[in-house]
Figure 1 (spheres, rainbow, N blue to C red):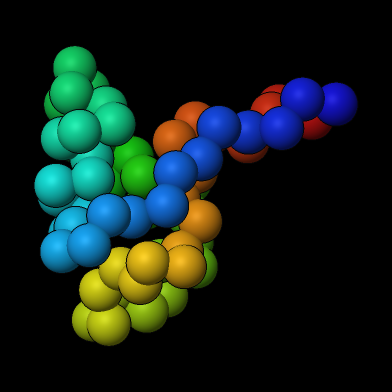
Figure 2: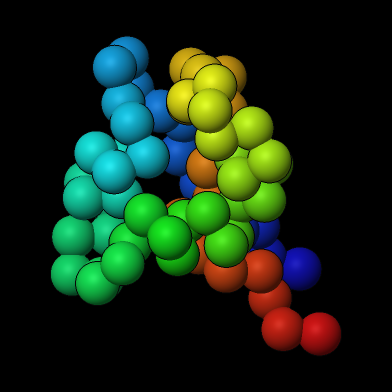
Length: 62
């Protein structure tokens, strides 16, 4: 089993800034990240924390 790629937010990151940096060629990158990181979608009003693990690729197909 291969681990999914992930990053930790940098200080001051928003979902939009993280998406622009990590997925620059992807249209709707912030929404894509939310779909891969439901824990972030559940508490979106709080914003990103430095300890958040943000997956930058989808889960493996079953």
